[in-house]
Length: 417
Ligand code: NAD
Image 1 (tube, rainbow, N blue to C red):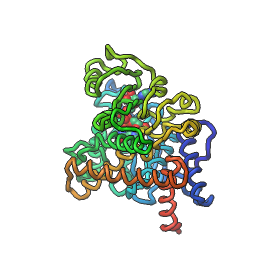
Image 2: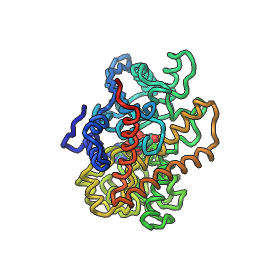
Image 3: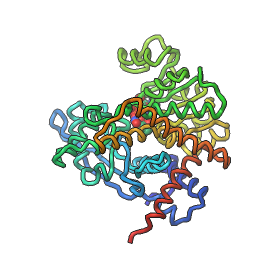
């Protein structure tokens, strides 16, 4: 069972947020014990035969934090820095996120400690298939449903679906979400997390009486979440003024399409000629209305949060703010839309994909967008009303709603035997 570490880390952050919610809800120490303990952890060795025939070993994980409200659900990350503690933290966040958005799921997370950028296409396929076969006994459409995350995409999901299906002896599209459309993916899944981030940004601006038209937005991370969030806020009339990725960043561009063309031509954001360069630190401290951290965890710490000048922060990434960073942002009066609300669009449309797969009946892009907006709006309204009514932060309100639903489900199911 994880204890509360003192250092800032995604697990320390997640446990501290859980403690706040448990105290706010007045839950017992027995309930804290059940809520703070992951239910199943699988650590696997993933051998990879490189293209030059060398064999390398990588560590892989799958953490099923909770299955109380349904099958566990969560992404698969390929990143050199992942470890068990971080995977537990992210699986915990998925649990509260699914409960907050009323999805019939528990929470999970997994991944392999590998730099996906160093893998050839065939190495990536072999690694994905071997990882899938190692976790095969515990995944499935009724058990645990993986999805893409940092370093993985729809191609990895196609290989995972195929590996599972070959072993089952028939096609099982519902075992993963975020698949290509032709394999049972959902329209709108690629852009879903970014679209949801934009909905959260729009509603946060409304809550602060800041006009949406022309609102200035700075984004850290230009991957699956950052790119689509940028496109979606632009469509709503906001103006993206600065973006960074792992290579550094830029300001002074006209549109996201122009920037994307520049990346295609010059490789990275930092290489595009004619733009003003900024560092990641400058991005976090950029003068703007909305700051969207959409890269990795722990960007906004007790140190970096001090210089933030945005009026609203919308957490596209998971766990981008440490508890010390959060305190500073709250003291500064900055409205923080927490990750479990702000980036829930991804798991909401993953749920739509799973429902469509299970029914073999597929929806139009408009139906997906309309239902996503409805589900996000319900969650945003619940969080906003609770926060305003009780004088608490949006983060505490979101966690209280999510954790409260899981605690209630524990109580109703009872303890076996
Ligand atoms: P991705 O791999 O597609 O993109 C990550 C981006 O972050 C890249 O642009 C990369 O260059 C950038 N980056 C990495 N390190 C950086 C650094 N130190 N400074 C600045 N930028 C850096 O990943 P993604 O799917 O967009 O996920 C981003 C975050 O959003 C993660 O925290 C992930 O867990 C979370 N998230 C993703 C989804 C989803 O559907 N993909 C859903 C919910 C939450």
